[in-house]
Amino acid sequence: MATWAEDKDLIHNALSEIQKVSNKVIDLSDTLTEKLGLQQKQQQVNQVTNTKEKDIKKAPVAELNKTYLKLQNDLQQTTNQAQKNQLKNQLNDVHQEISNRTQKQLKDFAKQNPEVKQPEKKEAQQIRR
Image (cartoon, rainbow, N blue to C red; front, side, top):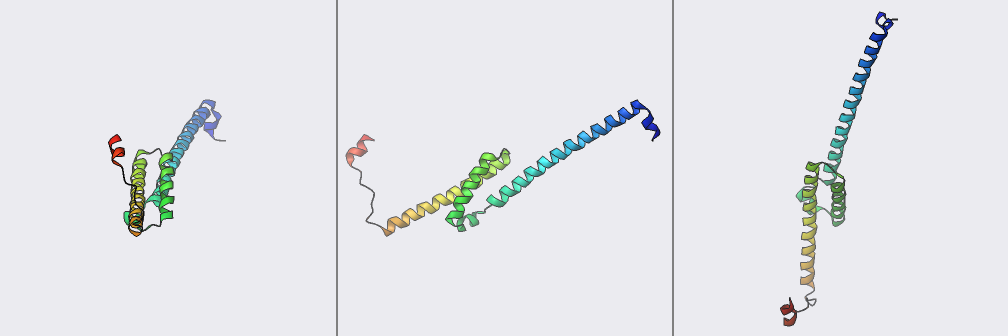
C-alpha cells in the first residue's frame, strides 16, 4: 500500500482531483463528439446536395425532385445558420432549374400544339379588373 494512501485527507484530495479530471475529459469528449457529429452532418449535406450548376442541368427530373425534397428536409432540420444559408442557396438553384425546365416544356408544348390556345379575354372581363 502506498504511503500517501494511509492519510485519509490525502486520499480524498487525490480522488477529488481524479474525479475533476475525469469529468473534464468526459466534457471535452462530449464536446468533440458533438462537433464531429456536426461536421459529419455537414459532410453528408454537402455530399447529398452539393450539386454544381452543370450537374443540376444534366440531372434527370426524378433526381432533381429527390434533391429538392432532401434539401427542404435538411433545411428544416438544421440549426446551424451557415448550413441553412448554404441549403437555401442550393434549394433555390434546384428550384430555378425545375422552373426553367417546366417553362421550356410548356413553350415546346405550345409550339407543337398551336390549336390549344388560351381563352381570349373579353373586354368586359378586362374592365372589371
